[in-house]
Amino acid sequence: FTILSEAEERELVSAMSGERGAWTVVRSLTAEIIKRSEEVPDSVAVVDGSRVLSYAELVRGARRVAIELRRRGVGVEEVVAVILPRSLEYVGAAFGVWLAGGAYLPIEEQLPAARQEYICRAAGVRVIIGGGGAQQKYGNWGAEVIEYGAAERLAADAAEESVEKHEEARLAENGSEGWSGEGQELAYVIYTSGTSGQPKGVGIERRNLRNLVMWHNGEYEVGAQSVGALLASPGFDASVWELWSYLAAGARVVVISDEERLDVGQLQARVAESGISHLFMPPPLVEELRTKEAEIGAKYVLTGGDKLNRGAHRQLAGKLFNHYGPTETTVVASSSEVAEGEAVPGIGKGIANVRLYVLDEELRLSGGGVRGELYIGGAGVGRGYLHQSGLTAEKFVPDPYSPEAGSRMYASGDLVRWVRGKG
Image (tube, rainbow, N blue to C red):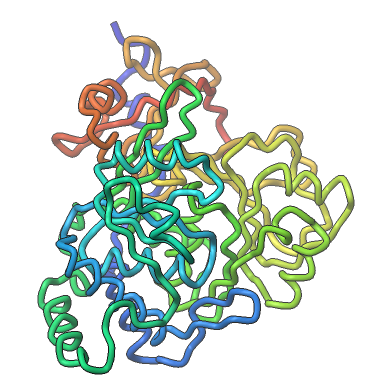
């Protein structure tokens, strides 16, 4: 039997879910970045300490990466591992994988070699892009290794210029740089921490990421004059959110060093010096700011990835937003502005084109205030677990509340209550 009437169900789903966004921009994220490099080639794309990379240099370096990957047979849907820290090189390598048509898999340099090897083998990686001495570090795994330096030629010297031009033309013809269509190709793969066993590779498609980027840039007023921060570790999916949202808008991305991200004082100085307008901070850092009554000058402070135990406070110059979202649903599924002094900040309602459901064990909607499991449907639902069809079928199930045939929803395993007025 059903507890709620159909009208009540519709009302509840509408209240919990995000607005329907019909994006007017249909170009792929890669095309948006290339467009910026052509229109304002000298505009700054990435700042990494004293090093600066323009949009033209970013695209030029990424194309060379793509050419090198194509020479090794990398094409659409192939997963390429990127084992680099937050840096100019990391950005160029990831973008180069996209231009080749592939999906990038960021792996933390600090992980034990055995864990890195497990992830590469589980993902079926043939090619790894790494930093200095990459061949010596990663060359014993049975995968080809590319050592990458930002905006430098990889395997093309002056004598190969005509070959490079030919390959660039092929890239453009291939469509990887142009219009995305449905965008069902894999964009990236993130391996979860594996607290319940071996880590699982979550595959996210380009259309999933595009929805997140379009929502983010509209919701938080991101434009070409904005300055975002790259603070999250590459293996944490918040880094995907940070990086591509700002680059797709033609904004500047400032790489936060390991020292700065671990020290509130240094982070404050970097935000002030670089004019950072949009800053992601994990909840512990936000709470440390409050404890120390420290100021941070960003217009928007975004947090998520863990429970936020305290509300906003006067030391934040801008607005604080709390976010929730499993890796499986493209970083962010819900968002809520945090009020000053709010005792228990909520996770808000779904972002654009994302639907949230609180369901009981029979997958029936739970009424307001009734605890149930959170299921997530809509545009953020990723493809599933790489090479694990059984687990994908278990966690990504048919969505009975979607108006679109064939839609799936993700069973988060998280218990929540819908409280009217908190979204």
